[in-house]
Length: 332
Image (tube, rainbow, N blue to C red; front, top):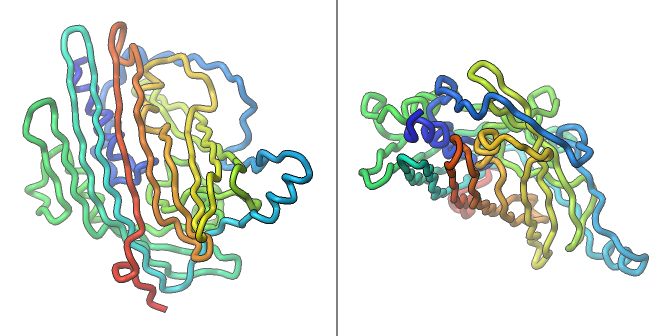
């Protein structure tokens, strides 16, 4: 399989909504699976809790420290009101490089998008129904030293490059509705927890059940799917660990890191997860109940991803920011 053919899969991952929250790219389901991906062997070193369960076993010391911790603890909850309008701008720059003995390829991706979230209703528990739509999307992919292929959401469909045809069609579909819980757990309209692969338009980072203070940590398990063969997919559990680093002037800074909950031996499977395991931080306005900024970074290499003596390298930074109030006005 040619290097460029293989990298088309990862162009799709670059525009995946899973962690970067970008517009989905062209469907890679029809692309061939590398031979190396057709057998998966895993061993587990950890006891994995059910999907979506949060372990709030914060790092607590002696009784004196526990008392100090209690005084500094805050309860992190999203707060929504009927008629709220929130706009988030996301910018992303990423590089995917595939090296083989006979050839190499380097793809550089840029994304700049603006999403609008309209709160349609909020019940007594704080659970909100929210409509999300893209107000603006710009994307480009440059292969090696070639001119970039460019897409923007105002393009007529007939002018959209083939690489972005699926994205353009999805942007023209009806605006999706999702349910937002005060804790940020992803659920469907029935209130049932959903997996990360279903959570394509979700806004929020998961928050702990209990109050936390600087130095406390918690974790969240989620599930994504990888392709084992062209016809078979397999669920992989991911573990995201969070830690509150500081709480100053009403703003909590929380770092996070995501990794597979199982030790994966297959390089081809690890390559499929290269975008799903970021590290970074987010800022949370406790009084307003708003995520105001999130930064995630990927800088990883997978050896033998495309066979012996091959290397797949990913470097990407994604920044999401709540836009100023003059651009995100509440209609209450």
